[in-house]
Image 1 (tube, rainbow, N blue to C red):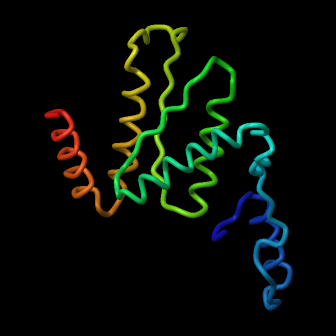
Image 2 (cartoon, helix red, strand yellow):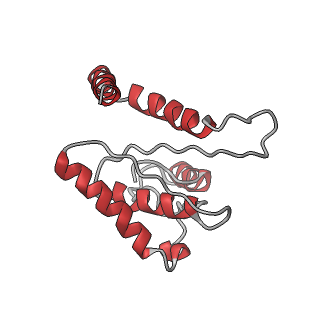
Length: 151
């Protein structure tokens, strides 16, 4: 990791430099992540679903096409945990652009059934805009959406 994970690690190194400015040492020895990544055991029993997502991703790579994976299920069944774990695993080996959206019918004033799609598309625009190939990416998306609409 190229940066400190906590202010405590940074302060520890600053104090060490203050106390012994000529002493060489490895930075970040006292640094720990205040929010460690939870173990993947939180998704016990969901290997089938995780493998299905990985297969969809690998198929998209093989076809050189983007893909959409929809994770659905009853409230509280662990959809978000499964999706985040799948993304974490894929991001270890590939560049992954992930967006998500949730529809909460209990949210006051948000009774639009497409609010989850709107939320995901907004995340996509933000992530895609930060890429160096943003103009080409947006052109490709426009082209793909236009060709799909004509089918």
